[in-house]
Image (cartoon, rainbow, N blue to C red):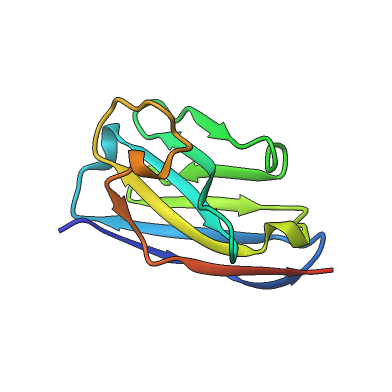
Length: 126
């Protein structure tokens, strides 16, 4: 059974940093797509960052480029999102997602992903 479990959320002041983790199990993520999404109250879920585990190639939304870094551990069982220079507009529930395929269309589309974690809350105060 595929399972994704996020952790690392919390409350920080603007300019601070957080590192989110996503522990993945139940699937061989050696050639798969994994992504981080976020959803603020009243807004649609949006893609923040993604990584193709086969090559390590990463993708970022323009709003987080240069501030967030997505990475994976060597065993490809844990996904990370390092978030620096956080802004109040980064406040949202953050979700880890996985697509059990080496092929992807739009990495930012939530419907692209097969599996989701339960989310972890990030709150940034000004």
